[in-house]
Amino acid sequence: MKYILIFTLIIFVSFILVTKTLFAQGESQFVGLENHNGFTTVYLQSGEAKEFISKEGYNFNNPRVKGDYVVWAKEVGGVWQIERYHIPTKTTIQLTYERNNLSPSVSADGRVVWESFVDDSWQIFYFDTLKIERITDTGVSINADVENEYIVFAQKEEIGEWAAKIYSVAERATKDIAVGTEYQNPVLLDKAITFDGETFPLNVDDLFTLDLVPLTSNIQPVTIEDIEAEIESLAQQASPDSEESNSSSQQEAP
Image (cartoon, rainbow, N blue to C red; front, side, top):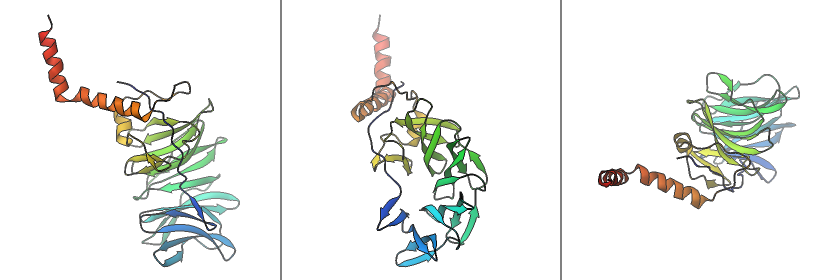
């Protein structure tokens, strides 16, 4: 059975401005930006210990941390490039070398996504720890987040509508999550998708298992209660009791 998911949630912004310092929180540590020797530098703080981890002589932006990895954008010759830093080994690798690249996000296993300005629009690129590939090629795609082989992002299509989408690297397929300007910052955590801290009723596995109709701009929104009722209906149809009841009905029919 096909059905449509749309509901009203507000975007959760991954970067928080606190006392004029932008920081990104990890499990037990966080990274931030601070003016150091005349440049905007990335620091890593674990408990009381604070360490500047980006290379001196450059300006940095958009730091994010997860697990043993930190990502950021580094300004090189007036253009922003993406780098990934490995905390245990204190090593940095540069992932991009041309055009502007911003808003990186990293998974605990070192995968990285970011937005790159290519073909006159922002598009999502993905580093799987071995190679880089382009994930989107239509509209404007921004604010990507990654966890294992799933990538969520916001995309503004030609009709002018913003939509939150999810991409499966394994299946090389994209699914719609929700439509609206308020869905421009989807966040992935333990296969759950959140907007403004609110958890979406279906996780990433559900979105690729269920046969969902693509979202369009002329569809009326449904409520969370409608979605939960539809899920319950699907579960009842799939239950053994339901199959036995249907079988009995067929046998009794003349």
